[in-house]
Figure 1 (spheres, rainbow, N blue to C red):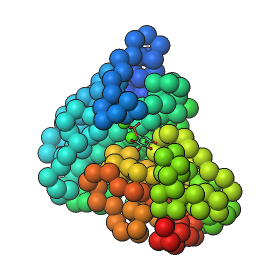
Figure 2: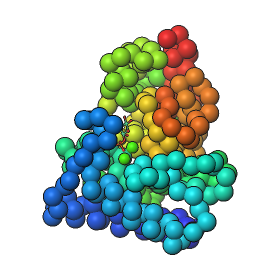
Figure 3: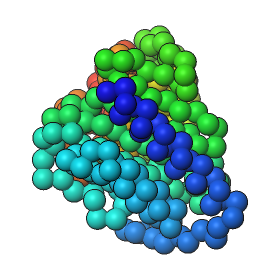
Length: 256
Ligand code: IPD
Ligand code: CA
Ligand code: CA
């Protein structure tokens, strides 16, 4: 386990270094996927290709689920699965050159075992798992206080808030304020560090796999918007929170 942790951290640091370099030197090639706001760049693709190469060299039997380049479907979750988002927050990456992260989640037979979320520009690397605890760079992260929804900030996906999906506006009203970072990984890092009481969004497995392992290891709850287990297959309405905030969010989503 320790060898795998060290290796994954090494690959992600290297990928982060390459991303920073390419921001300085390379012209970014941006293309669209499903619509004009769904972006992918040559750097997303290069980063995923690099991470996949490392994973295959390290564990040729493992399965890989990644956002880009045709690795976005799995037959099943048996065995070891690496779930990769090479750049989470691509829109921020393209337009802000910050507020994005690299993420890898490791699952064994459908259970999240390890999570790694690297905020490249701030050099904040959050990693860990249920059995080993959670670390920010080299420092152990303490479980955040179980604040209620009205005691903290709530991360919300912008269109979900605008359309009031699942009563998102009520959730926002209850909270001290809402935040929309455009990066699921950063929202989950913020939850792990106690600066958000919850997060609601519409997410694919690579958006929540890594951060989800970390927040659950810290005693927080996550599920689909109806309180059911996430399927790790396709996009779903996603909800996470401190135990108290989560229960309140679930109650509000059921009133929608
Ligand atoms: C997106 C971001 C965003 C979330 C979207 C994701 P991407 O990931 O995490 O915050 O609202 O649903 O698709 O496409 O930038 O990797
Ligand atoms: Ca993503
Ligand atoms: Ca991505």
